[in-house]
Image (cartoon, rainbow, N blue to C red; front, side, top):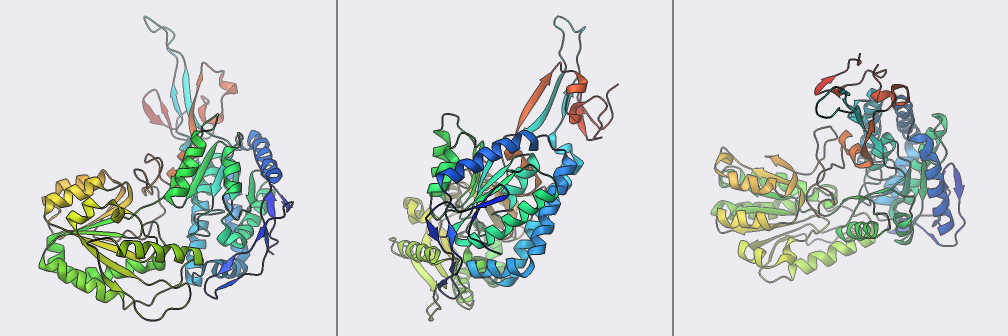
Length: 527
């Protein structure tokens, strides 16, 4: 049952007088539930409770954290139809997408449960003492990863489950031993409250300390700002716009104690199509990319918003085919009137740029909040001269850049901002374009060969991040079990009594985890 209240630990609270509703973009009406924005008092209560909980939670064993994470997954599944219906009602997304995203969320939680249950993720490293070493004795040094402290997670607009209340950031932070305060996204506050209730029930069943999780409602930026500025918060997770992520990053850096902000932000995910591929597969590539550009109404962070190729008759044919294929696809609903408003504004801004041509623009009448898919094209020289053309248009939009030659293509790649992904489409020719490949690798976190960027597999080898502004720290991924490394820091014990060490570093290795001992990876005890 949705109450519209905040979760301050395991207690619901609604002390404020600022309220709001979510919106059903399919029906173009407000939903019935009324949500109360968190007050400054409630924000401080949540942070203080999280700070207190951290004293206990940071030392909870991996096995107990695994029970907690699996319990969250179970409780989310137990929400059943109520969660799916609320998700669809607040996002305009179809039931199949809702169930798929729920499955992904559950899988992420269970993956982190398996990780912390096994335990080797802490990267235990031991260099034993050498008291007789000359000219100076060597101390005993033992290192592992420890949690940072209370974390704030900002829910994402385009993934009400997988990147929000119990999404990847939250799952990774809890797995690391960090209490989490979620700043719920106002577009899907009901979905967020239902998932928050599942986390609270799981925490109670697993015996976790009160305050290990809180969920705060917010209709604007005020709650998020107060959370990031609070001295009790030690890190921030964010998925959203460049402007929003950069504002949080600056705010965190200006604190008396600066803290890390791990933000996944803008990306146009360039796709480079090589000449042989264009010549051999123009029609099939056009059909494939028409589907990728419009998938989820283009509301994926990995949407292919930029297609690059060298001028030729084959490229002209591809552009024509892409324009033809994309207008065959029935438009779909965007997440919110504000989202489609921004999309229409940005597509109009793009269309007004000198030298840019609109080659496909869906002309039929649309339902309210449905987006017209748009394909545009421009000369490489114009693209280089006008950086407005480099900006992300969130929605079913893509720009085809027609390069004069491979040198211009390489120059364009070198001048792109950081991206989450790039894709190379090639037919027995990739070996001839080593500079193109090297240039792409320098600008992105993931390089795809003969595929599409839409679709982010949740597995240990996935990198979902990239050079700024794709993310604020390209050394980390926001997807997969290695995303846990954002919420920890390395810590060393020197000459510490064995009985006082954490189990991960004790001589007897009671957890039987893999450790790096005197230069050798082993799970054996130290004699």
